[in-house]
Length: 244
Ligand code: NAP
Image 1 (cartoon, rainbow, N blue to C red):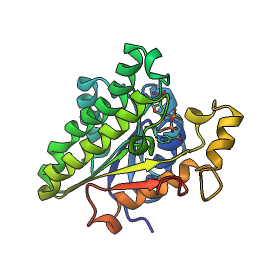
Image 2 (image 1 turned 90 degrees about the vertical axis):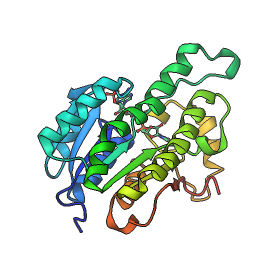
Image 3 (image 1 turned 45 degrees about the horizontal axis):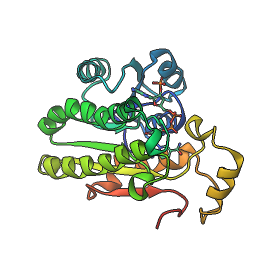
Image 4 (image 1 turned 90 degrees about the horizontal axis):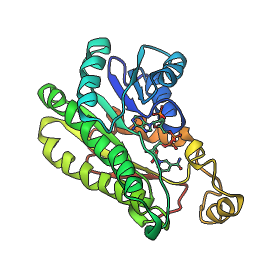
């Protein structure tokens, strides 16, 4: 089924990992996809693999004015944006007492401020058209906290509060906002975890495997499509049952 035929999606952090899988999945569902990463060249690699129309954009989501330009450029190339997936995210892990100001600021700027920048930039158009889907990729650690990730967990918890507020503000205009909270997914972000830590984590996952980017992409496709038209302000956890 190509339930997103004729729609235009923006996927931030779409050059690799979860974002790339989301871009490919939305494309399979029929959407044209604007793939965003700091490196336009890396974003283009994803666009080359899409099934239908798409375009690559280089944009640091932490920069508000570049996000406004991005939305304008994407709409000129592909048409009015109906789906925004805020997936760009980084980690700068450290225990609290050793965490540097710049580690805190970098994570907040990309993970939380970035979602604010892009969401504000698309909101007016979506409201005017009385339809739109905003899907923010948080993390289970935003719900539980995690040692060594005070900055990252705070940014992801912030994303949940942000999404619920946006959901309430925009519901009357037909714009829905939801969160997907992945558990441990095999990507570059998690590749460097030592074997011991991986084993310990695996023991906490009832489905007895780490997630694949495609597991998250399936949840995003659902939230972007007609089957989720009565859902807003929700957190969909995709973690193999780790957090219940
Ligand atoms: P990843 O493999 O490290 O990919 C991150 C993506 O974000 C890349 O495409 C990167 O491209 C882009 N990016 C980073 N900073 C950016 C910025 N300032 N502006 C624009 N793009 C930026 O990460 P991932 O594992 O796929 O994670 C994707 C999302 O899922 C993140 O929000 C992450 O927090 C969340 N998540 C991941 C896991 C997991 O286990 N992997 C679990 C829970 C949640 P460039 O480097 O070219 O900019």
